[in-house]
Image 1 (spheres, rainbow, N blue to C red):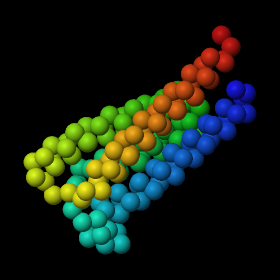
Image 2 (cartoon, rainbow, N blue to C red):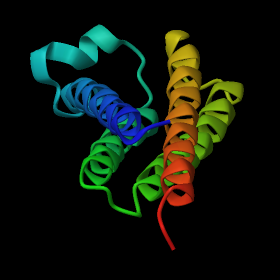
Image 3 (cartoon, rainbow, N blue to C red):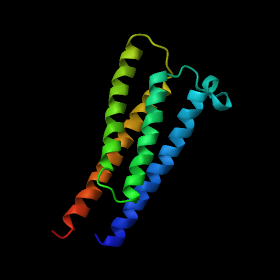
Image 4 (cartoon, helix red, strand yellow):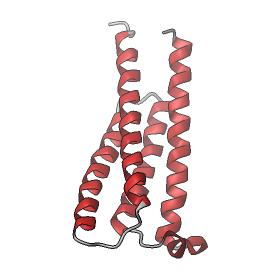
Length: 137
């Protein structure tokens, strides 16, 4: 893979992270701040899931910044986000099994976000591994 291809992949991944992070930030922030009467529209949302999504959105954007500026720490925010989402999923499962109120769509949304974060992290590791392999010693 040539340098131009790697650059395109780097910027494409950063763009997706920014877009997904911004969308998540807007949606979770709207629920937290009750913008546009979002709490009523969301129904039985679970507070800690919304907060985990909010924090994950900030981590996605931080990772995108790291990708664009070619920092060595870009995987760290994604790893933190993935770990946090896994813990959130476990907590959510406990909440649901205990009879806690929730929306059914939260299950799929949390699984999707966790899986997508894992894909982002994997892509960043692959990008970094290719970059490190091609750097002169």
